[in-house]
Image (cartoon, rainbow, N blue to C red; front, side, top):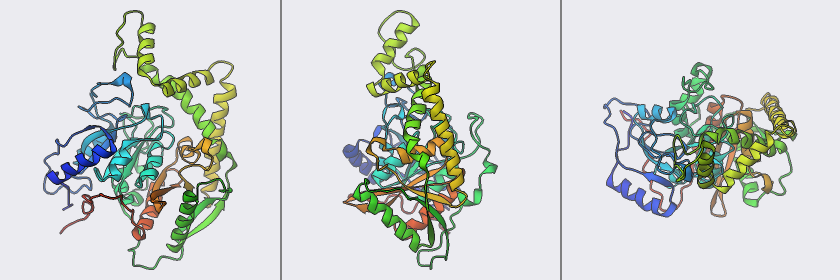
Length: 441
């Protein structure tokens, strides 16, 4: 049967010691591992995992990183979490995030990188999963929009949000994605599982590391724009990734996409507009911290938001309200939607000639650092961030972006890469999870 992990005193002590240094969790527990039949064969059996604090888990707190929701106990569980629990996985804690996921920091990636958990779930609106994965040296997947249910995700911008996966290997990401994808009656944007190529998701097709690579595994597109302003470590990472992929049998094709430079402004406009409407339900009346004042609904809600929301979130709401105002909507929001459609059409054209596109995770433009990540959210496409090298003592991650529902292809590429170039781990890392994917007679 599958080798499953059973909690040990050594692991619990290790978790507590690492957590003191990285402060990844808002809530951390070591109980609740289920009793499972001896013939259980799911690849997540008895594995602990973490969940970002904007994803609902019953009996855990749900603060979304905001003072407004301090002390709010969640009464239900997100579909993605529930599917993993049904297979025997156990949530051990909620991880830190920026307020309502509006940012690129997160404890989920840190918890995986430290070896506290083998995988975690997090929200990805403009690149949060992939950026934190790249910074921490782990693998991060943003699935195709509609591939994974968003029910239970306290979203920031509904048309951009999605639940992503952070894990210690591409193989682990594949197993978790296979468990959580599919149609959900609680989320009408989800796609029927029969439309997804099951073979490429459930099985790996890479050759053993000691086998000669095939003549041609596939074609990877690379942006031909000048990278002179890019940081030296990131430039080196791209070069290393291309050299190693080429040695494994992949071919490369230079591609251009002029509309990509407009992705960050379009993303910021759409995200702010959706957030201004989406966050209106957080009024401190129905749930969350209620203000200590009497008055009308407007007065009480205004007081709750004024005290509970942070400055950055207030700015986003104000910007969103501005771009949706009569007289400004056509100038800003509608134009951003047109750019979004152009970006999506541009990717559809590129994928006629390539199987995936190799991107940096962070843009060479410091003022638009998420240009290469938010484009996947705008187009609703899958993207996978994975470590390619260590430069200057720190991990360097790159991302592969594919056509809709091509998660299997992206994971094949990452697994092939990792079969000859394993992911390095930080000092003091203990490999509690190395054997949890293996099968015994």
